[in-house]
Image 1 (cartoon, rainbow, N blue to C red):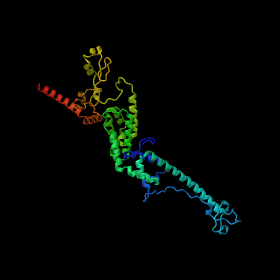
Image 2 (cartoon, rainbow, N blue to C red):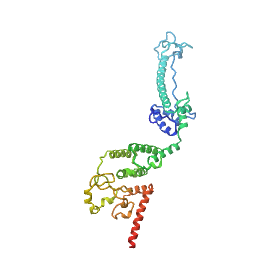
Image 3 (cartoon, helix red, strand yellow):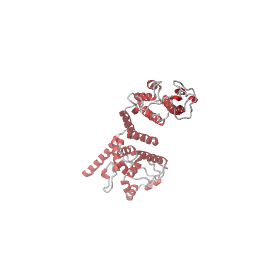
Length: 391
């Protein structure tokens, strides 16, 4: 319903919410909303500020004739200056006082006619908008010929409008749909961000609890986007931590930043990512010593220079090592080496990334298969440990 040229016509309660926003904006621009707003109707359902009526213009015959010989230069008239029970036929038959009254009444009537004409044109434009955007069935039911515009709008609202509770429920559902877990990366991130912003705006306007504190809606956004924008989320939370805690972070600011991030990511050149290009979130990778790396490559160096090796991304360049990606935290290591999946592997002097840990816990809740795989590895490790103890 965002464009009156669309072939889609108002038929449902869900459509009415968007249609009403457009109708109100048009009515407000035409200075008619105060007369259409249900809050401004009296006990009889009529606008407290009535619709303008066509003015009545003054006539010469509204005034008596002046007597012959009476001067028209005087500022006032007396009974001796006029002919009782007579009616003037032109302005020359009016006394000076009556001529002034006539001219003032005519000037005011012209102003009233201009205001009346302007209001009528605005009303007709809104009537045309209704005919162009509302399904004929609902026009037949709600928009009877001859009824004033506030009746048309009131009938449409009663027939297709929603209660406050229904509107709040709609905003709640819209928000939940916008932040639901993503099974795969959206093809159009711009559309996704816009959908999220609209859902946030509507939910905040309806005082949906999940959107009233920045810490709440930010945490939900993190859970939704963690698989696709983990680096950005971590850096943004660090930068805006005070605003998040103070509840002053603006979701529109976040939305614009998200657009810039996804846009820059989509145009980034493909190729090998250099160390330090992005923040690392698994301290184990930063602390891995050169000695350990050399030991892992020992015995394989000669073989790697004699043949091509294929990485997980289909790269067949000579000497390129396979890319390791953890199924849980998406870090550059195997699942069995993940410190979050197996806390006992974490070095005692390393710091724990609380945000990354929370993301992984949420991921495990939604992925029973991954949780089962981790449990299987733990069971195997325990079995090997028991066998080593027995021997």
